[in-house]
Image (tube, rainbow, N blue to C red; front, side):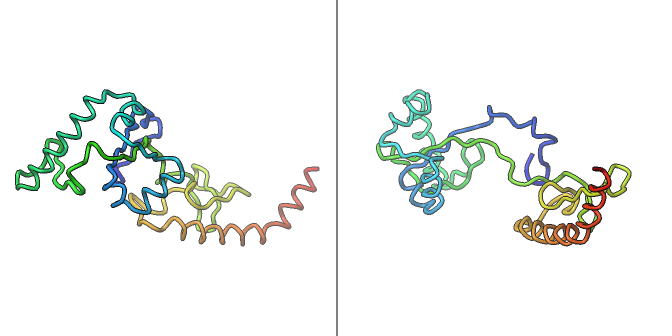
Length: 188
């Protein structure tokens, strides 16, 4: 699924869906601060040669070289008006790939970026039971909650959501602090 039709559960994602991203030096420079950021975090690494990449990735150097040459061929054909490549790709930026030059590569794995479901909450941030009744003393805000955005969300709303509901929760906690303390004293 994509953003409009996410997987039904996280169990549908597996580590077998990881893949390697391979950038030529030209591509890495075009990615600018993004590539540098991931290099600093050791999520990408530099390689001097295609041989080094093949050893690291545990793939055949011959097959890797053939794939890059095919990619270059499709890029050239696309630029000459031949249309999309065999996988529907129409734009081949920063090509041809210099198979003798340096490379940047890393493993990409699926990750949860934002959840579109979770606990039902009331406008006052109280968590709701299946019956719709508020669960006393249980408050929630941010990505653990669900239903606020409907089927899709606007990008950039996560921080606003956290601030709005964080503030609502803070106010609730201050207002109810005394009653919670009284209940705890009675239980002791």
